[in-house]
Amino acid sequence: MLLLLLLLLSPAITPAERCHPVDKAAIRKFKNSLPMWKLDRDCCDIFNCDQTTNRVIRLVLTNSNLAGTIPDTIGDLTYLNTIQFYKMPFLVGEIPQSVTRLKYLESFEINWTNISGNVPPFLAELKTVWTINLSYNNLSGPIQSSLATLPNLAKLDLSRNRLTGSIPESFGHLVAPYGLSLILSHNMLSGEIPESVGNTNFSQFDVSRNNLSGDASMLFGAWKDNTNFVDISRNSFEFDLSPVSFMTKELAYLDLSHNKIYGKIPSQIMEALELQYFNVSYNRLCGKIPSPWKLKYESFDNSSFMHNRCLCGSPLAQCK
Ligand SMILES: *[C@@H]1O[C@H](CO)[C@@H](O)[C@H](O)[C@H]1NC(C)=O
Ligand SMILES: *[C@@H]1O[C@H](CO)[C@@H](O)[C@H](O)[C@H]1NC(C)=O
Ligand SMILES: *[C@@H]1O[C@H](CO)[C@@H](O)[C@H](O)[C@H]1NC(C)=O
Ligand SMILES: *[C@@H]1O[C@H](CO)[C@@H](O)[C@H](O)[C@H]1NC(C)=O
Ligand SMILES: *[C@@H]1O[C@H](CO)[C@@H](O)[C@H](O)[C@H]1NC(C)=O
Ligand SMILES: *[C@@H]1O[C@H](CO)[C@@H](O)[C@H](O)[C@H]1NC(C)=O
Ligand SMILES: *[C@@H]1O[C@H](CO)[C@@H](O)[C@H](O)[C@H]1NC(C)=O
Ligand SMILES: *[C@@H]1O[C@H](CO)[C@@H](O)[C@H](O)[C@H]1NC(C)=O
Image 1: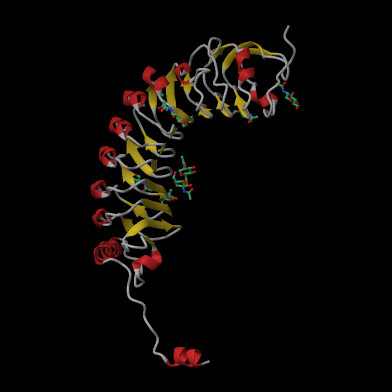
Image 2: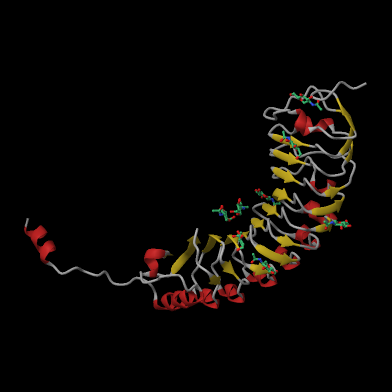
C-alpha cells in the first residue's frame, strides 16, 4: 500500500533517452530529407536498438507516405544490420553511396518505392550482406557484374524494375555457399544467359518476363540437388528440350511457358518427385507427353501443355 502511494506521489519519471547521440543526429538529418516525418520520440522506441550499445540495428519504414530521398546520413547509422523500406511510393532519388559504410549490414531491402537510377556498383562493397531486395522500384540500367563478388549473397531480387542489358558472365563465378535465389523477373533484360551461369549454386532462378534469348539448358542437370525453383517463362528462349535432364531432388516449380523451346519433353522429368508446378505451354514442343504422368503433386492440367507444335497424349489428345 505504501509502495503504491509512493508510486502515485512520485513525479512522472521520464526514462533516460536510449538513442545514441550519433544515431540521433543521423536520424535528425533523415527528418530533413523526409520532411513529413515527425520524429520527436526516442529513436530506440521507433527502431530496434541493440540492448547494450543502444545503437540502431534495424531501420524499418513501411507503408509510409514520407516523401523525399534517402539521406547520406544513413551511412552514419554504422551498426545497422537491416534496412527495410517497404511501400513508400514517394521515396525517390538514388541509393546513396554512404550505405557502403554500413559494415554490419546483412539485409538491404527497398521494395515498392520510387527510387530510381542504376543498381549501383558500390553495393558490391557490402561484404556482409546476404539479402538484397530492390524489387518493385524504378531502377534502370544494367545489372552490375560486381554484385557477383558478394561473398555471402543468398538472395538477390531485382524484379519489377526497368533493368536492361544482359545477365553478367560473372554470375557464373558466384560462390553462393548458401545457395542463391536470383530473381530478375519483369525487367527488360536481353541477350543470352552466359554458359558459366550453369555452374552457379542456385536455389531459385527466376528471369520470367524479360526478353532473353538463346539456350537456357545450362540451368538444368539432374545433379543440381539444391535448385527448387526455375521460371524462365515469357522470354524468347530457343533450345532443344529433348536432351535436358531435370533436377530430381528438390525441384518443385518449373515454368518454361511462352518461349520457342522445341524437341520433346524428356521422360526423365518423372524422376523429379517433388515437382508441384510444371508448365511448358506456348512453345514449339512435339511428341508424346511422358506417361503415365505419375508425379506426386503436379495437377496435370492440360493448360500446362497447350499451344505447342505437336505435343500429344494425355492430358491432350491421343497421339496419331
Ligand atoms: C511511383 O510513383 C507513381 C506516380 O506517383 C505511382 O503511381 C506508383 O505507384 C509509384 N510506384 C511504387 C512502386 O510505389
Ligand atoms: C522481395 O520483395 C518482394 C516485394 O515485397 C517480395 O514479393 C519478394 O518475395 C522478395 N524477394 C525475396 C527473394 O524474398
Ligand atoms: C522485401 O524484401 C524482403 C527481402 O527479400 C522480403 O523478405 C520481404 O518480404 C519484402 N517485403 C515485403 C513486406 O514483401
Ligand atoms: C522513373 O525514373 C525515370 C528516370 O529514369 C523518371 O523519368 C520517372 O519520372 C520515374 N518515375 C517515377 C514514377 O518516379
Ligand atoms: C549450395 O547451396 C546449398 C543450400 O541451398 C548448400 O547446402 C550447399 O553447401 C551449396 N553448395 C556449394 C558447393 O556451395
Ligand atoms: C527483344 O530482343 C530482340 C533481340 O533478341 C530485339 O530484336 C527486340 O527488339 C527486343 N524486344 C524488346 C521488346 O525489347
Ligand atoms: C500455364 O501457362 C499458361 C500460359 O501462361 C497459362 O495460361 C496456364 O494457365 C498455365 N497452366 C497452369 C496449370 O498454371
Ligand atoms: C482441356 O481440358 C478441358 C476440360 O478439362 C477441355 O474442355 C479442353 O478441350 C481441353 N483442351 C485441350 C487442348 O485438350
